[in-house]
Length: 247
View 1: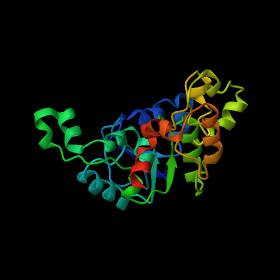
View 2: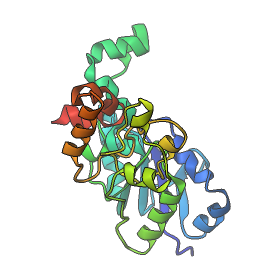
View 3: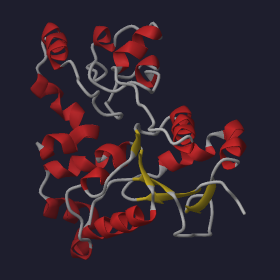
View 4: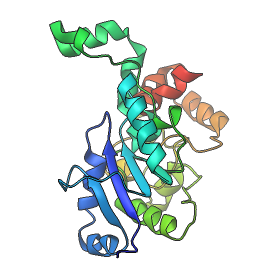
């Protein structure tokens, strides 16, 4: 009999790219599979079982049926992990929350809009208790490994509680504000290795806010560039829109 903990992966409203990061573990994949036993993972296997101890959930809650399914998964799982920005924050799905929902359905589904009972998107923590989070869009495979190891040792996975700016400075990047861009790095949780600024883009905040963001410092930085918080709100809405609506 296998003593490996049984693990299940589930998808809700998302692109399912975070689940593919498991396959991207490549050299580490066999080591991970030696420690866990996947029993439900639509992306890579046809067998399914409701006998699992750990559930990884990708995607946001966007309809009443999602709530029922989340609660059912939660009832089976001793540990539930919000896997990726959509599950953790609501993600890009929450951009629709700033529009009339009837108009959104009509735009997406046309004359079949009445068939779909979608509502404003929410992170899964708005519906069920979440025990651990792996943030990002997509998740970082090294963080996936660290989380799996921590859970196997009975520990709560720890996320960095400092901003992306720290990792940017360690990478010796030129601040993207100096390049004429705006950036959410000063208030966004690190852990991605500042991958977007390192490749010439701005931080879009996919990992969510640090626990105690230095908002005054961020406002000061914006003022130096002749910008206001209101001008930056649309950038926050790409991944953190649920937080704004929920206030």
